[in-house]
Image (cartoon, rainbow, N blue to C red; front, side, top):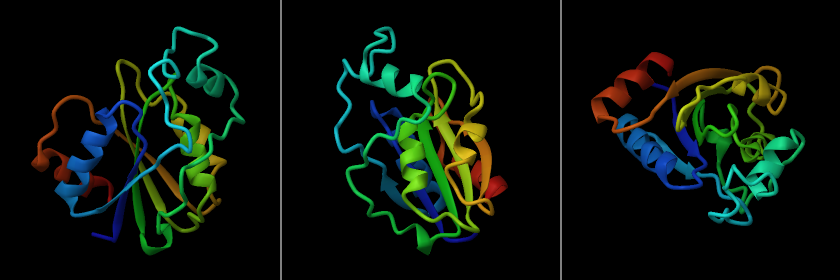
Length: 159
């Protein structure tokens, strides 16, 4: 396997749990994508059209600030990139992350957690945030309990 990074954004902890299990299962390094301003429960209330997450997701040009830019992306061939699905796509902070680093020649494999929707137009929504020669692959929804063997088997098919 190539040198792999598991990078993830998690607003409520579900994606963080899966990302940690995945990194351990495949022997990858782990990096948490953190917003400069942490999301509160009120910020994540998708039923409130004025909540922070609703406002960001309704503005495709929204790029929430990152807490840091410490991921050493240059050291990796492949990035397993995880996030919760918001409004059928990746949260716009994922665009912020992708636009903050040079992903030229890298393979980015997406994984997500979701309460009910699939990837939708996620790949298309992220494509413009990376170099033309970066490869973005729709991976898998990793909902519920995952076994280390199952995570490793899935990762071996995409790495």
